[in-house]
Image (cartoon, rainbow, N blue to C red):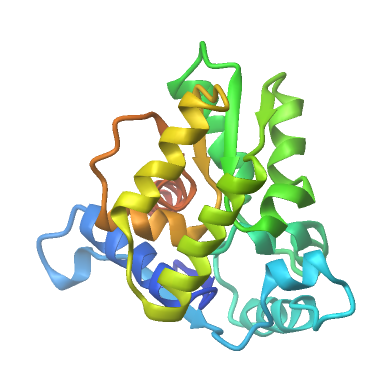
Length: 236
């Protein structure tokens, strides 16, 4: 297969399915051959990223992610996407392991905010506790002279409940809880835009999209970037 890209997914699987649904839905296709060529690596057994970031004595996801990147690189994809925000903690190590470019999900999300919300200065970040404390989005936002707005302990507790108890554990989305989390980030924390910094939150946005507040949906932005790059491959 030529002119294809590789998706490193399975973190978690319903969120990766959400990425694929959006990718295929947004692809301007009228026949089978109009869809893009890609390989999905649904590596569901990768150790939990947030658990490791909060406690380095726990199993690290890096060896599994490195193995995926190295194995897939032998097939010579045109680019990689990693359908997990927290996994980008290891971005530099993963990119150093391959000559194939890896799309930087958090960086693309911040670029989206700069383009679509040019007057916004206070940017909220919600996700797993690993993502909200490991600095992935902090670094990208600060480089763009944007202020990072973190969740309170109570908002983080609600976000963790939605991600792990509802979506990962039961594969269901509590739409009211999702909306409440975003509302509190805006009304209580003063965020002008809220980054959905976890693919489970992007999954929630897909299933419960009637939000009244501005968000930057990291996985939706990754889908659009994937389509942009894949379209360029066809134009060669």
